[in-house]
Image 1: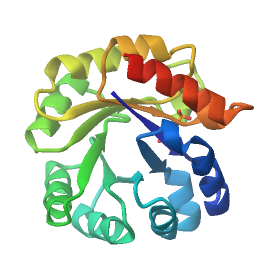
Image 2: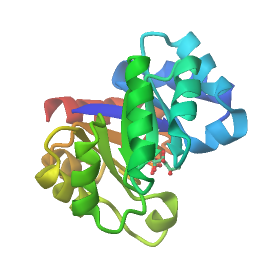
Image 3: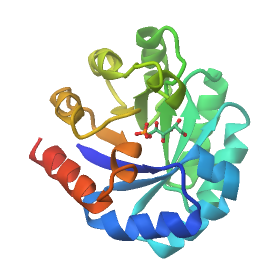
Image 4: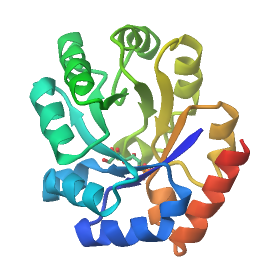
Length: 210
Ligand SMILES: O=C([C@H](O)CO)[C@H](O)[C@H](O)COP(=O)(O)O
């Protein structure tokens, strides 16, 4: 199991500062969608240049024209790029094909997917690297989480790695770990804490002890 830190509500200098503090405790750093919207792929480029040994995920949440967008993210230095599970199969196939050319990986975010079991099986057959269940901010705000959805994809996904994101905190981490996803994505559960280093270290410890 790996830990991905999602950086969503920061600018580039703040992102670098956070990563410096928690670097030993994370496996992947995510340049979140709001950061890409504010700063562009320059954020991916600068973070990869500053931390070349870290795996960098660009959370572009691609919905169309995936070949072009995966190409641009790959050129900026992203190791993993996100595409939405709700997009067309052709879009996901285009993302996978382009990623393979650059030796990169694709994480499919299942946010908003209504028939999760069926779609997860279809997406799995398209050769993606990760399938991620995700409760976004808007549903977190009304008390939802993705813990049951994680059980669903764990049951039906045969090839891709499984991942979970959305509102995971120290208090809910044991429940997530018990379901054994390959990747656990945490944003505010680390960046929203007073002591971000301690929060990341504690989460890392729990995850690595399994
Ligand atoms: O993808 C995300 C969200 O849609 C904003 O772009 C977050 O990175 C993801 O939800 C993880 O962050 P937390 O929910 O704060 O853990």
